[in-house]
Image 1 (cartoon, each protein chain N blue to C red):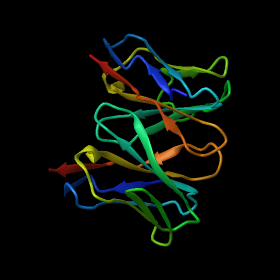
Image 2 (image 1 turned 45 degrees about the vertical axis):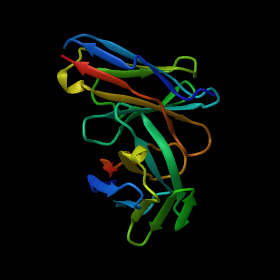
Image 3 (image 1 turned 60 degrees about the vertical axis):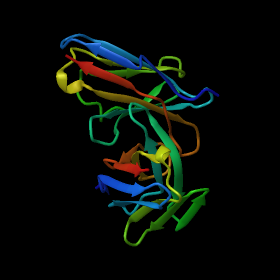
Image 4 (image 1 turned 120 degrees about the horizontal axis):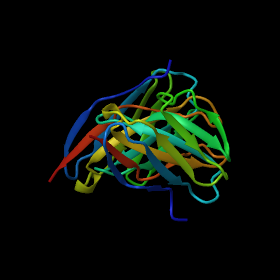
Length: 112
Length: 112
């Protein structure tokens, strides 16, 4: 068990570009969550999956944000037409039937 | 509504005890969590308490829950310089896969 992993750890992009982040949950975890953390704030929930089903996506910040988990294992979060306000740490977490969510190291996005 | 409040800063001397406080508003919280975040890193689960408990101890960590006042605290005994980090309180409103609601975090500085 190597924990939740996220790639890349850092991403610098120019405004208007699309970016995609990947999250690999702990192997037996069927539930996966995405959060966003801006400077000086706690994590803010974006969306979550149970297996490949996306069960909550109303908190995604705009229609430029989308997430997938096609085979119920890893997940991707895509931001289209990035804006400077998208600069943040994007965190992924996973769990199973218990209620404890385990977090990955995050992907730090900087939009220039 | 969901709201978690924490004081933003705490400074203690090495060897002293640290007490980090948190208040929450939703009385239907089921679990309450403490996470630790070091600079540039993801969130590390420290401990959690179920809402029908009033205390939980785990080595140097003691969690106290006052459900009547909706107040949660984390006491770190014999605080070390390695404990310097941001500590987040989080609540989970319902059982199952609802997201966590985080406070803004308390930055703990340990002075040698």
